[in-house]
Image (cartoon, rainbow, N blue to C red):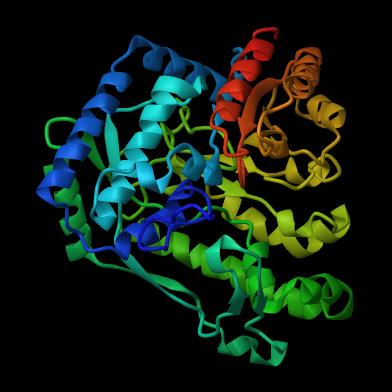
Length: 438
C-alpha cells in the first residue's frame, strides 16, 4: 500500500525533502493550527531545541565550515532518505489532526530522528523555517501530464509542438502574497513562541540546469534528435530559458526575496552551505552572497561537445552570478570535467554512480569537494548487505586518501528503504566507520 502523502494527498515523492516543492504543499493548506495540535507541535519543538543545544551540534558545524572551505577533515556524512521518510515516519504515527499541523509535525519528527538516531553529520538548529506564499504564473503553454497517480509512473504531452510557436512563450513569474506570508509567519511564531526561532526563507529554485524545463516543453526525444535535426530551435529555446532565469534572479534580488543559503541550508545535490567565504545577511541578499547550482542529468547520453554547445553555454551566465557553485547530480561528469571546471568559484562537484571514480578523484584533488553519491539501491532491500556497502565506501575513501580529496559521503534519491528504517542507521554507521580510515 502506498504511503500517505501529506497535504491532503499533495505531498511530494521526496518526503518533503525538496523545500521548493514542499512550500507549494504548505501554501495549499488552510493556515490554522488547532489548540490540541499546537500542544503536540510545541512538545516536539522543545525536543528539537534540546537536541540543537548539544555540544556535538557545534562540533558538526565546525566540521562543515572547514570542509566547505576546503580544509582537510574526516569525510562528512549526510543521509536524506527522501521518499523513505514515509517508511520511517508513517502517516498513521502522526498525532496531529489538521493538515498543516501534520506537515509541520512531520518536519519536526524528521529533525528529531536526525538528531536522536540517524548518526550522520546534519547539524540540528533551533529554528523553524517558513517559506513565502506565492503564485507562479506559467509560460503560456504547459505540458499535459498523463498518469502519475499514487506516485506512479507518468508521461506527458510536450507543450511546444512547433518552434514556430516559440514567440508565444512568455517568462514564468512569481507573484508573492505578502499578507498570506505574514499570516503563515505569525502562525509559526505563535505556535513555537519561546522555543524555536522562526525564519522566513525564500526558496525559488532547485537548479539552474534548465534541461528538465527543456524536456517538459518539447519532450526528451525531440531534445535529443533536435540537436541534429533542428539545432537552431534548441538554441533558441535554451536562450529563452537562460533569459527567463536571469530575469527571475533580477526580480528576486530587486524585491528583497533572496535569502542566505550559506549556513544550514541544503545546497546543490548533497551537502550543506556552511561557509565563512560568503556574507551572511538577512536583508539585501545578492546572488553573489549565495551558493548556486547547475546540473544536466537529462543529457547524460549527450557527448561532451554537444553538452557544451547546447547546454553549458546557457548555464554559465547564471552560475557566474553566484559566490560559490555546486554542479552535478546523477549524471557522470568525468568526461565533462574540462568543460565544467570553467564555472567560476566552483566548489562542490557531484560524483555519481555512473562516473569513473578514479578519474574524478584525480581531477578534483584537494581543490573541490568530492560529493560522492552512494548507491541508493543498497538501501532498497529489507536488510542492507553490509559487506557490499562497506566495500563500496572503502573504495571511495581509499581513492580520496590517495588524491587528497575533500570527501563527503551522501545517501539520497531513495524511493524506498526496504520498509526498514534500520537500513539508514546501518548505512550511516558504516559510512562513519569507513570515513574514519581517511
